[in-house]
Image 1 (cartoon, rainbow, N blue to C red):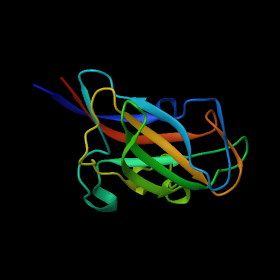
Image 2 (image 1 turned 60 degrees about the horizontal axis):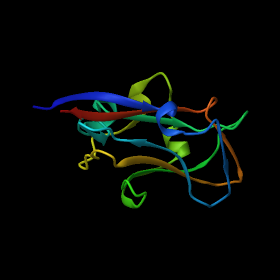
Image 3 (image 1 turned 60 degrees about the vertical axis):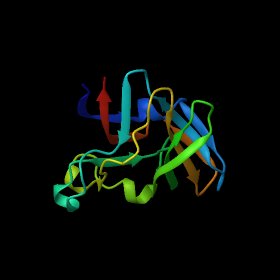
Length: 150
């Protein structure tokens, strides 16, 4: 029997390098989470019950050394062979950078119907508006997920 519970990804899970160089308009993989044996992972948590009552939330603030980095954030599922399987969500950085401390002001993030299984990957991609750097130590990610452990 599976144990199902809420968890979260942070920048430690989804940004692989200390800094990532970006080129305007070019998609780049910031990082990935490989689902271990005995787990299923869905991005998001709960159902969408409106802004105030949503249980799952997402906050992403990508930064260089001094200022926010703007662009499109894409969360995707990939095969173990690094082939894209499905785009799970896409958001503009301006939308995701709402409020770090007040969860009722963060973007609602209900559980996605696709559960990513063993050896598959949840990938964070970024398509920047301008060429620059994403600095992991300055960036902040709080992404609710649903885990099933067998």
